[in-house]
Length: 295
Image 1 (cartoon, rainbow, N blue to C red):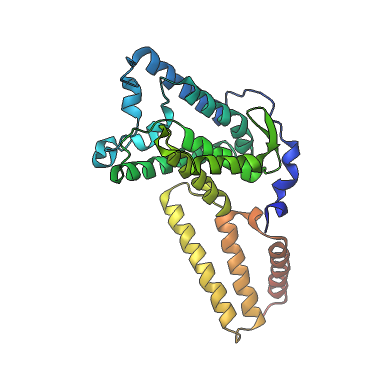
Image 2 (image 1 turned 30 degrees about the horizontal axis):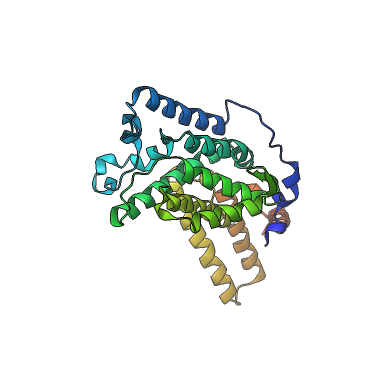
């Protein structure tokens, strides 16, 4: 199924991207938290020409973090620290999060949005830690760019025809997505910007969207294991029914009903297709009729 076949594709022009502020939204709270960390570091971090400040240094991801297990918390905290020498670092990150993040949060819901953002930051942090531990780049990593680019790319994937602005130039969101990928992929790695972290964020968004991830279904690790087990059982069932033509129509209907019930248990009634809903209605009526007639 192509992008144009998805339901959201017809709603791109209905997006309201006008400035507004809802302090209860995840986007607003993330912006506030990032700004607080930035200001606290400026005021109390003893920032100098040779130091990013003690707060940033405590949160930033370093090249040797992998070899210091007591510092592994930095694979997440780095995303809440921004350069104390360049205000544009936090300004453009928060600006992108504000304008694109609100639509993404409305699309997925507050809780799912927070999980996407934080797990994207963690994903970028872990990969960056590994790359810097075994590679020549020994610079520290700080900033929300990876997580913000993940959110920005989810905006692009969900609303490819929405009109956005690159500096002052209007363009479809998908064009901006192409710019994100190309500028980060072909940029100079020695410029001081962690372009690899940006690409990790884009990769996370791509996997989330095209693999159909949904973190709201995974409330605890065991639910994730059970979800995989249910998927495997459904896969084996499909293979079995295709390879076993000896099954009667009644047995095939019963197995199909079991599969659909498993799907309802795993993903809810809303996950059913119209064909599956009609099948279950017909099958349920058939079962009730058999019970009424008796043996």
